[in-house]
Length: 260
Image 1: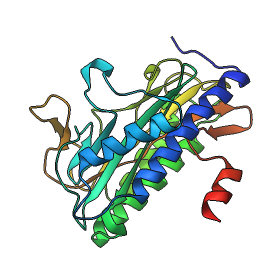
Image 2: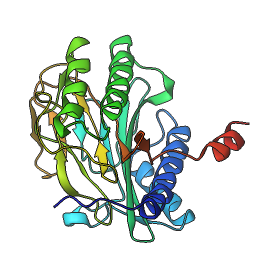
Image 3: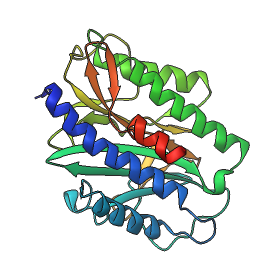
């Protein structure tokens, strides 16, 4: 069942989303090439979530052992943090969720370690991020659910990449995963009609090669079957009367203070 949220409830989700955005920003800024491990990222996430007086959405969720999911290079999502050091040229996906006052925020970024990677890897990051915003733009009242995925798929394939089929976005609110599933592919004009008050986690996962993936023996880490690079970006979005409202961002006035 899809639950629509009131404006007051959406503001509570925005508070959780702001925590997620702050954490991701600080983690990305503190990755040291050749030194930071994926487990260090997990420790940073745990400390930051506590600093902002939130709770992890992920830790112990369906048995997941860590605070954050970290995916490196050919890993798509759900990588379990370990002692692997991140090297210059790696790309690393960081997926984090936080709970504030019973409401969830969920977001993911993929960054180049040290700010540099191959030209193809950097293009993959750019296209995947742009695909996310293309999908978000379709999250408007009156559109159909599949319009989001169609927009993402069309943009990705126009740029020569593929969209993962086996994993999708989701509704979000008092639970991290709610109805509906939000595929990143499909024909337009299908599925439920989007309405004001719906809250969705939209999260394209894009591969340089084939869209086929497989899960490793740890039962969590998903990798590209052909070993090609993969990128993942995600935002929690509320559908408002005038269009999509991204909840997982740092408030504008705070961002000015951070950047200034």
